Image (cartoon, rainbow, N blue to C red; front, side, top):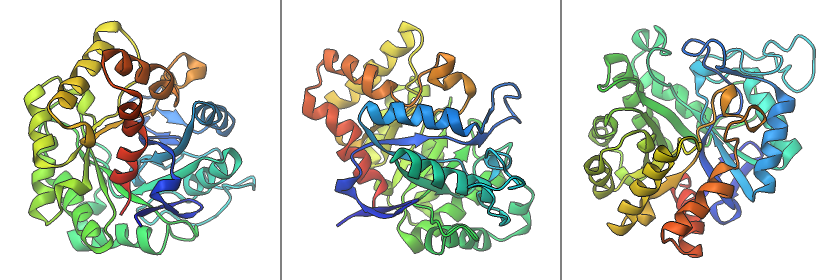
Length: 329
């Protein structure tokens, strides 16, 4: 039976329920968004996740990799005790406070939480990637998946998100992607990628395949940001998962575009390769600030797809069986 590692242990695919496969709860993106790029408020996070649970959500995949977790916890150095006071160093992986805070939050809300590992993209990648070999970097990812984050007693369940910042893969990003591939080959963990704004997901997938990764074990992220139907079809025909993960509401033409993109893929026979999520990562994305929160896909977007022609079984497949298959080994 297929299963995935969560903060509370291994869980069978059939017990994951409704899944958001690409989200962030505690994250520090202040390098790119100084005003709104830090999520580290535990009370707000709990409020938002409880709304997710009320909307029928069961499992959330938290993809905040090493470079985005420094300071991404209520008390990142553990100076004042409590669940984040672990005291263990990050060693090039998720910070100790981040792991501890997410584990506590999952316990408080009853949400199953799957944690990602690996190395993100430029401009966040550090000089350490240049100083270590690809295999050494891969071993760190394997450690998080097999032994657990250092000192935490919690294991990662997925590799990612890893990928490219622009319309090409930089040399440093290539090292991170190849390391992710080699870690996958040793563990079987799925890989989820960042490929936003430009059709760079094909190049990322090329690198992963060159390392021996099967496309069906790769989730190509941010397809919703690229309005190129042939790009979507190319990815689908190669067998990768197409993740429409910036489904956050907003102006009608954008929402209509997402519906059109998804329905075109369904009509082409690719319903079984599609994933939906919101990629909450900024203060403006939180429901308390007028954003999508973690329930928008379930409460507002699925009904739009229903009106576009999907039946109840197809809608449920998008948020249950598809992500269960995608993230489980």
